[in-house]
Image 1 (cartoon, rainbow over the protein chains, first blue to last red):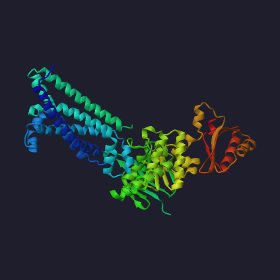
Image 2 (image 1 turned 180 degrees about the horizontal axis):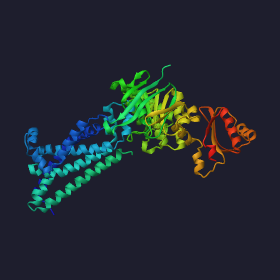
Image 3 (image 1 turned 90 degrees about the vertical axis):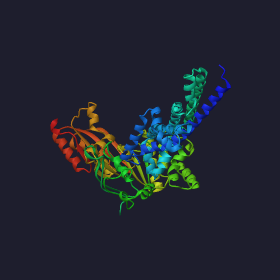
Length: 219
Length: 343
């Protein structure tokens, strides 16, 4: 199975588009998703920033967002996408729905890993005279690092999968190439190469995440 | 003299409405400077909530908690942080930061207080030396034994040079030997650093080992309080008695094992030096009763000797009655278990 240079160029372009979409949306997702997850935890009952109202509203928004299937979500947020990036077509435009959908996913994963930190450790920090802000940074987030790295890893892989649906709005990328050329035009070789590429990337991301977790874990 | 810690009419209710739980139902107590004050109670008695009100990990529902002249319930956030730095706290589950090594766990309170690095360095070395863990500085909590973890907890609690140490069931997850070594460390540090210690526990052994005064808690209330030696040798409240019985001989233990008393079971308790033999000798010789010693316990609390005897007094009913009168008139604490008429 030897690919023509044209096909190689197509794959290369698609791979770069995927890399662009996934890496930028992963960064944005982490920047927004982790703080959102922190907020979900600290507003819980008897936690350090208890607020039943805020917790309820956040939960509602997150659940609502998560309940919409991603292809529909892309279309649903088109007006917002247009408002933010000026267009609703192309890799940059796709980053908007990708990030929005992944942020709420990331927030839930963050919530789970922060809840793994025993409350006694937070109490010990309070008793030691730490401020709420210090507790968030130096206890909650610091102690949950292995879980948070896992959460970022899982989110990245989810974003790689989601980005395959970006073709629907002309986003391009490997998934889009596989569907349009590999499947719809019966170019099996392209299908194979993209699938293998995606497989390698996902495997690589997972391994990187596992390695990082092993490095900092001391439990 | 004013007390270092003074709690007045303290109540704490969790939740509201029908699902609410009254954890503290009006607590009054004081702790003097330099004391080791123990609170004993079963789980659910409210002792954990009580000690958490001392550094406002729990906010009291009503009442006053005055520490070193300041009412904790009226402090704002920054005043509270300052007050908390004047108190160290250690926990049953140690609550160390698992991703920080021993050194940085001890450094944590100093970092949070914004101390400069050279001072932190010097202080942490000093603290680790104090708890005997200088060689474990680079280890992580998961690599330590329970006793070592609690030593790290103690070093961390003392980092900001507090004057009060709060111990929340600090030895409850440790084996007896480790418990003894941690308790003697606390006692030693208390002397060296002139600390005042408040501890809560469900083990009478901990109380008799290091406490000066004790409060017995049950169902959100203090049912008895006093010098440990007094409460221990002459408990008044049934709850106090049951705690004492765990440590001392208890007659149920004998009865369960199938022991049939020949006569009347009595417990004789005394404080201070007393020779046991003359007492038993007198019972036998003068009153012609058979005094069977089922159990004898002689020990000392904070240097004061005390003892208890579990006796089975058998013989002629009249003689036994006279013997009981004799015991009542002696300078001992007498508890008669069995009604003589039932035999």
